[in-house]
Image (tube, helix red, strand yellow):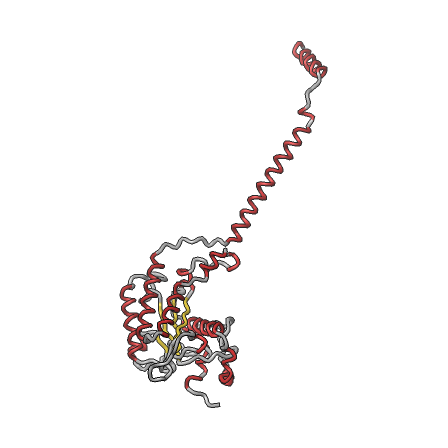
Length: 324
């Protein structure tokens, strides 16, 4: 089967996508850009001017945040949140191309996946499946790239051709010429420190959250930004405009979250419940012991009045001892 450029293995699995350090296969020919901007474009699907926009925007952000080191004062600058961009012309979801079980340590590259591209629509038949595939793709890229030092990394995985399942029904992706408009789509993945900043309940198991807390748990302000920019793509915004907006809005939100005090309690609800239950049991045991002691006192002979004869004898004997 003839494999087109878009159908190569890196379009199927992130395990075959180039590492950021692989400047040759990342498709960035400019030597200065290779060293200064964390962008990989193996399909060479975007222009140098679009990469320049990302580079200039990141430089302005890092100049403003030059003294805001996230991981520590000894961190190599730029030391704020770290951003990376991975581009693909198209994504071909196939069975076992990605998995929740895959990680940086275990990310197998199976060339037989290339034979599955004809039936990839079976795997990507629903919107949810495509979104899950793309999110896992972005997560594995971020983990393999090792952008961050302490979980402060953020990776944007951008498809230049959006899957049909991710198009809104009321969107007409046609230009006035009748040609199909290229509509990109963004997936985002971020490290543990970023998740901690934006989600106060990320350290708690879902079962330990109340209904309201679960609703908050699924409210991701950064994902809301990504979704809004995906809508902007559908409304005809260019890649340059969207990437600038994306970075501006992420900077604003992360700056807000980073400036807020984070004195959150990490004690799960189940531990609090167990503590309260034990306290109640201890209280009940104490009350039970008190009642038992009271009952014993009432039944003891020491509490019975001594008859008159015994009192007289005791007094008489005492008198004899005194006389002696």
